[in-house]
Length: 213
Image (tube, rainbow, N blue to C red; front, side, top):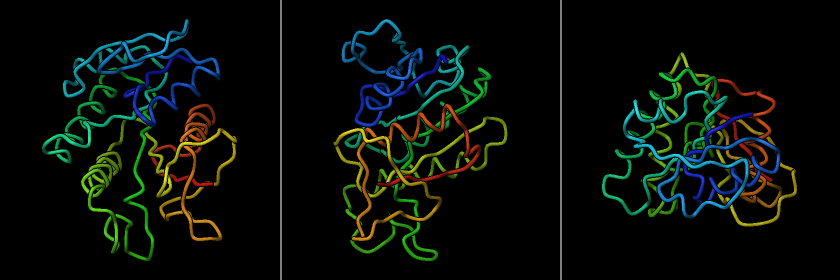
């Protein structure tokens, strides 16, 4: 199918791009620097101001789905506000364009580690990741109020690490998945597998789900 990947040169976005092309999809990549994209006959680059819903609508119109790995960058000022603003504009652009589906790369910070306690609020959560965790939690709240676009929000485990593509992962919901040793991790390649599986075989419309090894 024809899909858009937002942030296709980033850590997660590049894994989504590799997996999507390997499965035969036609991809339009919305990126800041098209020069960082690989050359591929089924890959095209597009530029759009992601804070402008009209520009987003023009860029994503005619596609079957948008996979969003948007991030304003960890070192920008007002990261949380910019992440929410960009995500809201992207959502509005997808809505205006009538794109059937929006799949969003989420965060683990909004997953529960105990009843009523989310990971981002737990003692010992790394302070350098807190603003990003709160930003992605804001995006989840934004999506949960959306009643037009068919959205899906995929939360990774606590550690999304480089590693091989095994094609295997466990599915979860709103609780952080851990293994028998108490670890919560998955390779970024297998996260991309889970996202593309959801694209091709929808099972979590207007819901958040999570994955881990």
